[in-house]
Length: 143
Image (cartoon, rainbow, N blue to C red; front, side, top):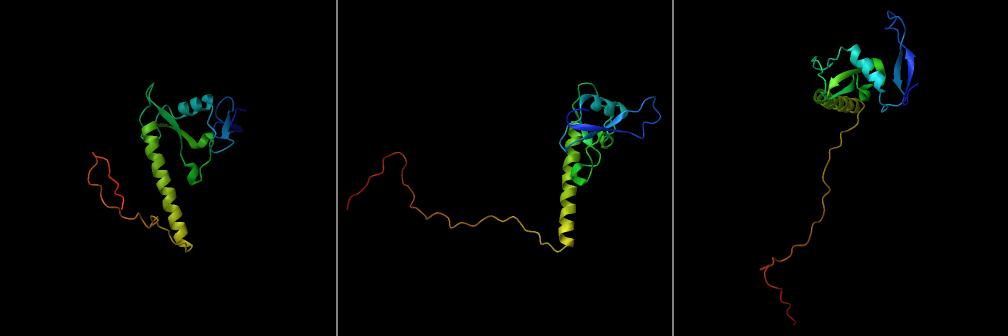
C-alpha cells in the first residue's frame, strides 16, 4: 500500500499475465505515487489526453482527472490521464467555470436569489483645504 492511497483489482487488465491493483487516493488531494504515474503514462502511450499530442522528454506534464473532482470525479487511477501542463491549466479553468454554472442553475431552480457583490459604502473623509506649498514649512498662526 502506498502513502496516500489504496489498491483495488482492475477488471480491464484481466488480459494481462498478472493483475495489477488500481490505485485509489485516500483523500481528494492525495498524489499518485511515481510508479502509478508511470503506469498511467504508459497506458496512454505518452499522449496528452486533452490535445492528443505526444509528450516529449523534459516537457512539463501533470496527471489530470478526466472527470474533475469538483464535478463528481474520483481520485483513482482509472480517472487519471497525462496532460500537458498548459492544456491542464486550461481544462481546470473550464471545469471550475462549469461547476459555477451548474451551481448557479441549481440555486435558481430552487428559488435562491443570486447575491451580487457590492462595495460597502462608507461615509468618506471630511474634505480638507488644499496645502498650498510642499516646499516650505506650514506656519501656525496664533490668534
